[in-house]
Length: 424
Ligand code: UD1
Image 1 (tube, rainbow, N blue to C red):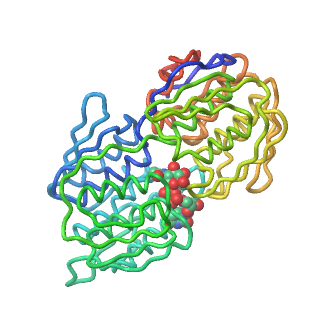
Image 2: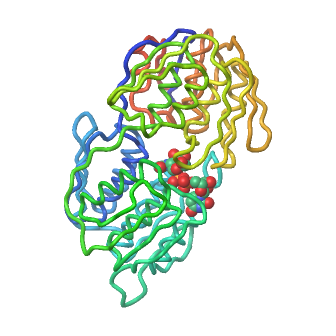
Image 3: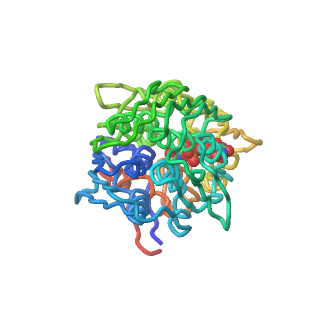
């Protein structure tokens, strides 16, 4: 397995181009199953999860063509050859469950392995299933698989009025995609408002779907008979943007982040300004710079537009270097403090009480060998390594490859002393 070696304590300075959002690209790719015509996606990030989704879709019968740089993907699901998503692919990536809605909407049936638990919590899919049941799908759980089908004699899903009892990003995406090909109107209440949902809805509209209420908690879909070919550019990755913004702050350097959008990152940029970091926004770029003496700032994760859970670990890393204490509260996932013991290895002072962690910042952290448990935890360890004196080795970097395109290259170009060590 590869590891990353960092010699920390160097302020980063330079420019980083932000990639398209993984969490937008994955549902967008699944949307190709809704149409017999090609879907062309540009600004796709070149990541392991994108390849996994490609393999899953090929297995359903889609052809996938990717440009050499990996950034433009043409997905063409002229025919669906299999409506089964097997365990071996689904277990690698939870977002595989996003094929469920499109398959049952187009083919009237689907058999998808249950994604199971993962490091950051139990993460059930019960709400995805309830949402699809509201459209008339009959659902059974057998042998670790979800089997969904239309009642006999019925050709299409039926529009419904569904209120999510809690906000779920994937659940909203599955229902939104399925509703596009249902008969009649579907109203989705308490829909997730994440920019990735708006991006999906925008692409579905380009494919001929009729959706209103974009960006709000209520989405209304008028079902259509078929969707057609379309091209769509994936929204910039707000989590990658936020992560590099924090890389500038934690190393007390200056980074200009290009090809991104500040308006989908308000909660993080606001919290950054409260620390005393300087945040400058131009058209499609954000420049973040920080000097010594950053203040501790409390954050609580919430559904969008609140502070994203996918930035919690990185925020905690920044707070380990701030002046004073900060409280970091996680409300989305029940077990998302796996990075805390690893941060302790750098000498950080973090105490967890239930869903909150008190971080007491320190001036001097020192590099250490650490191990990552999930994607965002891994990158928080990279950030802490960049800020710590001496050598850090981050083990199990395959997590990073799932979500950060050319991470070492992007950071090294700004002065970080970071390299990948193969096969440790
Ligand atoms: C997506 C993101 C992930 C992010 C998360 C929250 C993708 C590919 N992943 O994950 O990076 O951390 O949103 O912003 O976009 N829940 C249920 N039942 C369900 C579905 C969810 O109880 O059927 C719970 C989950 O356990 C969790 C909460 O709802 O506690 C939010 O999860 P959800 O928004 O669904 O996350 P994902 O879509 O899996």
